[in-house]
Image (tube, rainbow, N blue to C red; front, top):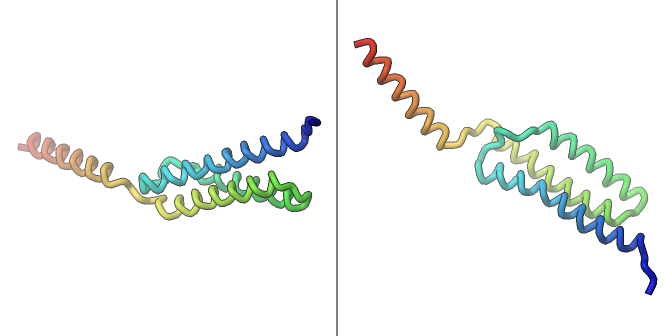
Length: 116
């Protein structure tokens, strides 16, 4: 049995590239769960999207399955993050709104007491 370095490397890079690409879905899930994209850097995801698109095109040009497969997953995950960012970019979570209203009411009451 001969050790095939290229085959082993292709398998490992495909597995790791897939895991890395799926990691972007974690950010998408967090945006969806919180219904807010307040702390997400959209520029980072645009740059990642362009980079992964470049690698996908390169993978297609050289017919490399690991590059094609992992970058399709990565582009899908990043596109999901970008779409969710636009959907929830100005949404303020209800808990924050409720807390802000309570603080505003308390401050208003203190001001009224000081005026009397």
